Image (cartoon, rainbow, N blue to C red; front, side, top):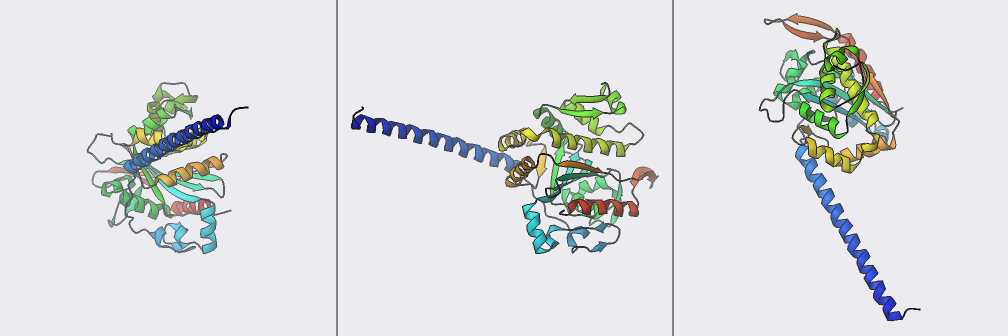
Length: 331
């Protein structure tokens, strides 16, 4: 049996070693958390929201030409509480056709609404063709929806809210360099490549694993008879694949890695705590289904320059808005 003094001496050394290891772990954790917050702060850009019809409506109010909307701020208290427990949020994804080092603001080539409804276990996607003829919020005129970005992201958000008939909780703005970097960082993405896009990619049609550059070419392709509507369907296909193929990558470490890579190419009003909360809730609901909605419209040319537009009739707006409202409801 060891003497009491020797046992105490060894115990002290062991306690000191454990304390040193704990301090090291705490220092590493603190450094990681600080680095993560600094990285997220670089892309965090909240914007002052412009007035829009959906944001001003009470529950069940009817809009003239946009349908109904259910802003969370106007929900009954019981439903508000349930909304907090079962996360329901809307995100506007905007893809801008500009390079990282370009001084040009660019235009929104991708306009895609995402509804995340934890209560229903569903993610709903809806794309708006970039040439859609809409009322530009706060400008008193109509134009292509992608021209709204020339007045700022806040104008784009309000314009989309008015057209779709539902409020937008958050926006995510990325250029195409950022899109490629994320896909490459994730190790590529597997997509079902249709025969038309396959010709552009110089690949056989069918299920293919694509790099970031190839995925961007696929997403931007509109050389078939569906034009912008075909491109919108491919946008949704990419987002759906990302949701389904990144289930093992939703962690603070991976979030930091992605943000570090795309810091110059991404802007959002989603705070870091919200990102982590969203990733956590997605992990808790790994089998969420992805619902893809779409508008139907017709091409048209008019104006002094005979520019091309997409016309979506009022009845079609209302039809899709009702689907969006349904996607926002708690089962």
